[in-house]
Length: 243
Image (cartoon, rainbow, N blue to C red):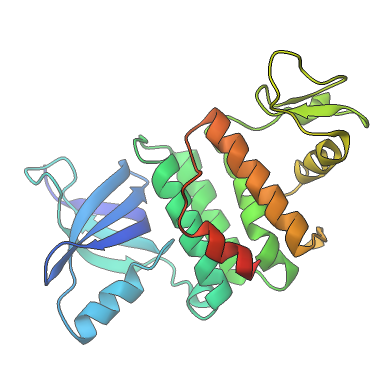
């Protein structure tokens, strides 16, 4: 198979040898895929690390499906550069968290244009976010990602006073008797409020740090219940101190 242009989102870079690393990425054309990338030494190494920071959006050339088990990635170019993320430690930490989460969620994924477009759009929102919107980005991202993952809660079942059934992803008049995975009335009300969050309105949600972290914990537990375990994300504890 001839080399072709590929569009990708960098998720994780791991050193393979003195002059080579392995980049795990989510691509428009092939879903989740790994590439070898020349890192070199000195300035060349620094440039490669900067180019492949978590959530970097790149256009490159690769021979996916060719003779290489892990194909080499050539001529990576930012598309577009993430100036806002690269200049903000808080945004970099959020990007690291999102990339680690995606590397778990999308590990065995196939190409999905809607998912790829959503991720690119979300990354660009993070790049330009300001103030409260930055801190609330992880909540908005996780909730709206659930829609593309097919596990979005059914908000149409919400009525004030109902409890949120975590296992079935809906609100009920009374607590389920078959299991204990549900939220109390007050947190169920918060869950319904979070279900309205979008990338456009996330700056209007006024969470305290404790409230935001509680929401994140519940959302990660929901993902773990419905999709794949997210209990061991290494970046989560650091993220808490930022948002």
